[in-house]
Length: 422
Image 1 (tube, rainbow, N blue to C red):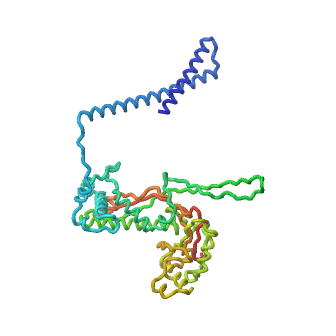
Image 2: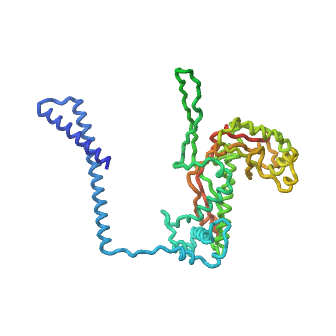
Image 3: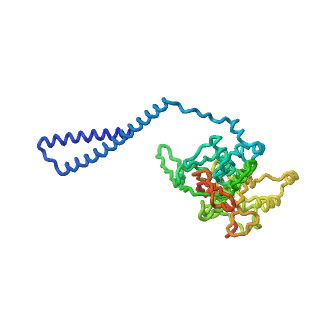
């Protein structure tokens, strides 16, 4: 309405000008060419504004007529009210064999069974479709059933559990395919002026980190004929497999980099991350780890600096270094040691090379606060699609899960790493 009111006000202004021009002509004053061009331009503007106002008023009239028609139809006969199924009715639809099973990953057997029947429905299973319809699961724009909340939530929860990149990086929800995040590069400067002296000003400087969403996909096969008592086991396996592989791929992009994927360089090939070099795994010394800690300079106040290494490296060569340093009591040897190194927590990352690493450039360890150093852009949570023809010869369908994310090392100066000398 604001736009229409502005147009009407402008039309009134143009009509006032036309009145002035009419008075000029009636006073036997000839209009200059410039004045004529001005009037012509106003005429075009008036016609365009009038057309837009008339179109809007016509649309409003049509909407009002449709509303009146609906009210008239509703007054003739009230549609029957469809009662929503109660929780008890939903549970009773689930076969007894399925209810007696326990899911490894879902909150309840009902949630797991619903998620499994959803996957079955994607392959055209009529019984699965009827089950979802009985539970009032909504449909999407293409007529298919919407992804049940338990399925989407469980997949996301497993990704959070398996993936270090998701757990530790700073998560940023992207509202567009490309999302720009400001980064403060120069802070305020502190001065000590004399009494009554002027204070020197300082400027804050910003740069930008651009996140660009890229697709990450996983494809698994499943049978088109799944018995009711196998649905929960199947969906546990499918969701666990997809979540694990997606988490591994996310960690690969963050730590090692993957060519033509989400992040080609990762922390390993980021030259701005302080690098402590060692000749080999066997040549590792505690001093290499202290050098890595010192390489990031004074830690930021509040930073949660932690180690990220492969479990085989920590429980092998690193443990040997700690044991050789002495000071262990019998209780330490019997009860084991918590995964800490030089006072900092240790996180195990399966995608990092372990104790058997021998290749030049292998990333052995990362130190720092990933929530300060790395951005994890989340454009779209995982969703599902079925490929009916890809594995038809084996009477199977492919279940595809995709997500759109980006991972960037935004503040490399807060991170350090240990690599084998290249």
